[in-house]
Length: 104
Image 1: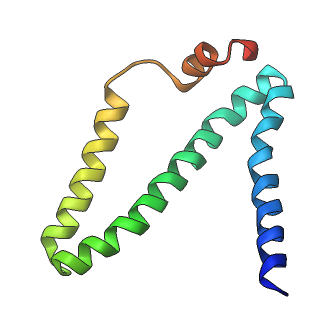
Image 2 (image 1 turned 90 degrees about the horizontal axis):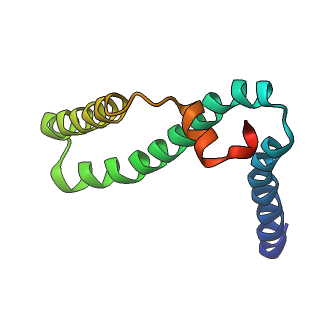
């Protein structure tokens, strides 16, 4: 397959994957509420995974494969997770209803 064909096929596939999120606009509220947390978790996990897969090899290359790099990585990840989950009592569903009032 030529390079142009790969670019076109990949672009169409990525667009189709991105359009899956638009399905949530027509879902009933109960189904939307059940799918909200897993979809947010998938999105957050994808972003974190992508970031760590890009940053961690660079840190290891520059600082060496030492325990300090891994302790810093785990400490930063744990601290970030704990601080973001404990800073507010608002649930994901409440936030979504504030942002997307049509979902109520």
